[in-house]
Length: 281
Image 1: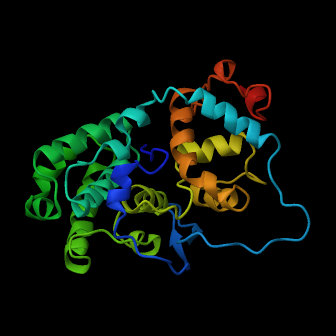
Image 2: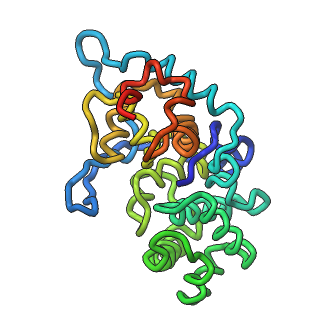
């Protein structure tokens, strides 16, 4: 799984986002998950009405966050070396960079960072632009991106999305989450990361499997959530907005190295004394 580096990639991200529009109109729609369960997708983060009484927040969350930052200070997880913010050509024109960011996000789904990074390198060696992908036949594209997860579907989605970008956006990528999630093969997590990295705009928390798992283990949600999009909504309800940008990068690396899906390394974790899930493993 790929993530964004804190700060949206520094100067490169600011280059990418130079053409970002001002305010955006928030809207909400519904998408279907693979299990055909309706999950609400909020396209843009919007202020939520304050509820009466003290605002809910998880116990010890600030201390847990600081300890995770300490464990991540070396920045030596796979995401730090091969995450999406490392996959695009920083010397390319901004429009091309944004396209490469979106493509790397599409490839990263259900795929390890190492595999995504290698696939992106092979694509870039061919000259990775909207036009080069449109001119490439499906078989060649499949050979280049293999063995990313669900590579056959991704060939189809990449071709469809690239054609839409050429026809509707002049070869650039959309600058709102609402438009991004309408593209074939692009989900909410990818859209929020694209906004962060490509447009240098924080539209919401990008919740992948690592963020979803860890925040549930830490009880950073009022009640257990089953889907990443539910987790995103629950987190944004209380987590200060100025922390949204770093959560994905921070928790993805932490999930790759310490809070593993199976057999988490609780004995190595600085949060073992204040983690609700530590006693279970």
